Image (tube, helix red, strand yellow):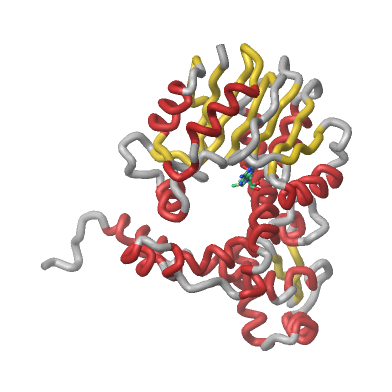
Length: 330
Ligand SMILES: C[S@@+](CC[C@H](N)C(=O)[O-])C[C@H]1O[C@@H](n2cnc3c(N)ncnc32)[C@H](O)[C@@H]1O
């Protein structure tokens, strides 16, 4: 074989690079877990950071260089400090903080570490457990992660692809931290919203809604979709990331959504969606492996079977592998 002249070498290089993309997130997780980012509100040398964080000076400097390459830290005259991106995403006081995402990904890490065994057995429990200090806070990290994702691009994308200017009351089913409701109410001044979720999640939603000063327009409603109806009288209803493929009881949830909406009410579904051939895109395929995902066509068919009309895919975000479907209750 002529090793010098090979077709498709660019694709091979791309795949090789992709194969070790487990590294950047570990850089952020290490910086976060060691408390390094909070040290970098003001410029510090690597030695100063290492001293305050109790870390090895040489490895600390290497970690900081990697953080510079990721764009969250900058280096100036031998000192390191957070960039604007770093301050926006990595400081707990920031409204767009991603500490929850980094904690959540530590928990997910162990599923991916055990993937070979999970595929062999079909049992998620075959994966090694996450460290106890992360596993104990699984729910909190998860819900705060949903906030970090919605606040850093996905929520803005969702709001920019909807027109709710003539809608009055949104039900956000399984609304989590309430961030999509906040963004939609900020975009549409006539809109009020109800975040409907389990009590443990609503405790976080309350904090998030207060943080954004939206208590006057967004209220909370405790509910469990396994037992409760969603209520009535809504002219729009959001189901974001709660219809994850075949295990998600989508038909049951959609039937409740149908009953909760007024005639003419707008259903908005946002979720990870595979293409109709079920060959990608990669973010949706990876989510499908971990949790589950419908194809666009499959989910649209279930929505139609529930009785909704005018079912359409209004936007797709390839970077996330997520789609936005709307439909109307006749
Ligand atoms: C993946 S999160 C989605 C949160 C938010 N909609 C978003 O897109 O960021 C799923 C949400 O469903 C909620 N949930 C899980 N089981 C539920 C149940 N039985 N009844 C009501 N909500 C539930 C969780 O508390 C969580 O907020």
